[in-house]
Image (cartoon, rainbow, N blue to C red; front, top):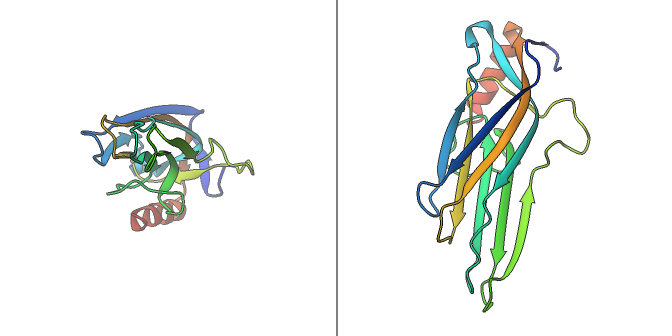
Amino acid sequence: MPRGLKESSGLITIGFSTSETAPNAFTQSRVDLQLNVLDREVFVVYGIQVDISPPDAIAGLDTSTFASVSNTNRTTVGNLGQPNVIAAAGSQIKAAGFVDGGVGFEFASADAPATQLEYLGVIATNDFFVQVQGINNLGVKSISGRLMGVRAVADASVFAALTQSELLSA
């Protein structure tokens, strides 16, 4: 457990999913953690699993599906190089110039980092966000997954720092 936090629950698994509102349209959903901010409650993320829809295989056309999970509201799908992104995944089919469905490529952030860190992140605000967007697909794409962690109570200075950091990284 990070310094300045005291665990207040057992392990909690939170499922989430969202689908594009139309093919290739950026779509975001908010998932409420129901934290008690008056008692300085935060959520310590120990693991995350993310599944995304595969892109459509269309002859001669590159297609993609990208998704992310973040602790702040976003206007685009994020990547792990951004401080507010907890997980990211993508799947691409490179078919430009081919007469068939092309070749597929995938990437995803690991369910837990290879270094076996103590925790993946801390969510200090009351919710997290799930984003998905396809490119050049005929059908809608989706993301689903599970966020695993515990509730914890932060001391006043740690809670203030976590909340400010999270809100400023939006």
